[in-house]
Length: 179
Picture 1 (cartoon, rainbow, N blue to C red):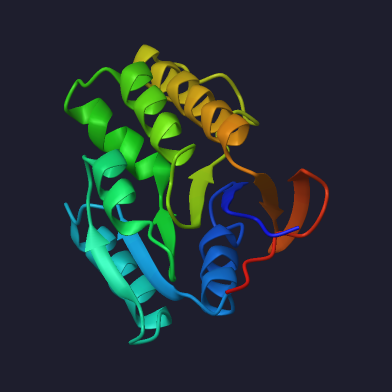
Picture 2 (spheres, rainbow, N blue to C red; picture 1 turned 135 degrees about the vertical axis):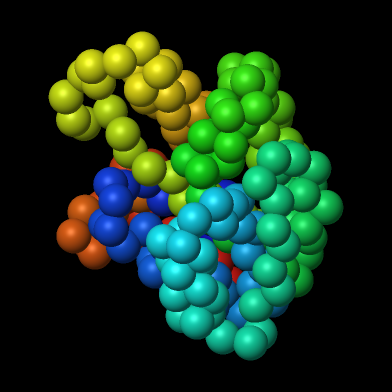
């Protein structure tokens, strides 16, 4: 079975991005990264630079912190494989804009269902810890959980990363991208 869309979930530093990058680079398609991070401080600039250094020159990078659904529809084409890294930062960007997170998540899931080419989504699993002590953090956790559920319903396959190990959650076979 060939996978067209994959959601890669996991905690911080679980190996999500590395796993998604490996799948894209071994797919035989031209890899495209849709980067959602914004470099608001020195630490994030360094993190973005480190991720860029880990990718080869054959990657096309599209920076899109807000209009992810439009960028994804444009970039996911036959002969390419898109990696969205990451859905969590995209959601927090929208939250800072006070956007309608439920509507944006539904729009993204709708676009994912109609993509012309394959895509891999990296997203944080934030629901496994304690209940946050403040309303803003609880709102974000709830929105992230809802987004992950919408992507999991829409994507062909879902993998959970833990300590660099991928555990297949949906449909039960290792995702394969072949072109």
